[in-house]
Image (cartoon, rainbow, N blue to C red):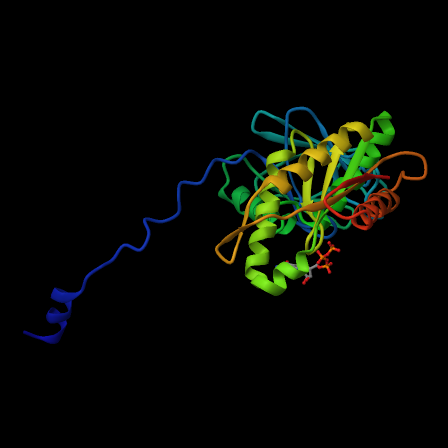
Amino acid sequence: MNRRSDEASTTRRTMISPGPDQPEQGTMCLVVIHGEGLGKRIDVPEQPIVIGRSHDADLHIPHVSVSRQHCQVWREGNACHVRDLGATNRTRINDLPVEHGTLSDGDHLTIGESILKFIGEGSVEARYHEEVYQVATHDALTGLCNRRHFIEIVDKEISRSLRHERPLAMCIVDVDLFKPINDTYGHIAGDGVLRQIGEIMRNHVRGDDIAARIGGEEFAVLLPEAGIEAAGTFAERLRQAVAESSFTLGDQPHKLTVSIGVAILGPGREERSSLMAAADSALYRAKEGGRNQVCTA
Ligand SMILES: Nc1nc2c(ncn2[C@@H]2O[C@H](COP(=O)(O)OP(=O)(O)OP(=O)(O)O)[C@@H](O)[C@H]2O)c(=O)[nH]1
């Protein structure tokens, strides 16, 4: 028997994987592939949506080269239409300035110095961009929004609340005495605690509320349409839920608490920095007051 046929008779083939799952058919969308807003993605609906520098734009690109209301896009059947809204830097499709045009799969739409790629319906690429965007905007440990994404949402919600004269509240949540947990049980156990607190937060926010991990053991929740009373009630429920939970550390059940600072948008607090500073100083008072409590600004 020659060597070649010997190998052939003993070689086994192992199927490691049948291949990727059948990708879901994505809807048509635009993804920022260059410049400010990198990774942002927006579906193209039938109702026109606005891309621009304004916080009110459906796709907000905060860069000086982008006009406040730069262009509109909408779908009609399988076609994606674009209309320039009189932008100083005219909207371009595949680098040609347009007043009105349609996009085909893979076309580039230039908005100021940002370039968006159009991905037609059913393209596998849409899913890839969704996953990249998810990674870029979420915290890997807890799955909540990351700080950068949270800040973008806060800016947008502040602008919406001021325009419509609607309430907006922010809670900053800090784990009490977390350092001793790390020191006693190690960082991996500490990470497990953060993950569990993230899960409790996810179970408590609803609708349009946004929960985020904004620092090591610091979390935040933005509550659109909530005044001080509603936000305080939410924060108290969250505080209780954490206090009533059991955390396993070193194979033993443990109790943990959080302190929460709450602030609402209002005079002197009409910017992200002042709103966050107010929630932060309320949190400081909660810590000073003995922890495991909610303080409002
Ligand atoms: N396991 C883990 N620990 C982290 C992470 N980020 C920050 N920390 C730790 O979080 C701890 C924060 O401790 P401090 O800010 O001193 O506060 P504290 O012990 O929680 O006390 P109070 O806030 O006053 O109640 C530090 O030990 C950091 O090392 C993380 O991602 N994972």
